[in-house]
Amino acid sequence: MVANSSISRVLRKVPRENAFYFFTSIGNYTGENAGSLEEFVRKIKEVDAKSLEFHLYRGDFEKWVDETLEDKELAEKIRSLKSLSPSGNSLRNQLYLIVSKRYEKLKGEFCS
Image: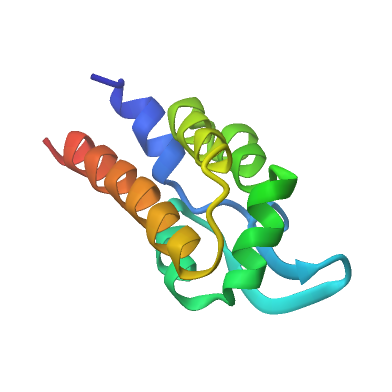
């Protein structure tokens, strides 16, 4: 069980400058960003799969989750997804499953 203060830190909305900005390649911003874990879950379903591939293989997701949201457990799960080399909708579905399960678990612990 994670302490409520740790959970609220992971679930909080971060300032705009710390939000995750989705790109499909260097300099090609999609116009989408996520300022919280809840928004991140939603954006996984919405953004172009090329953007998910770009960020997964650069380590951007795990870095943002670890350093900004301060969720080392989720960062590790995302890192391990890379070794499976998913792409396209397979990547979208697997990433969504990992992140949404973690979000629901934390939300459930926080509310209980």
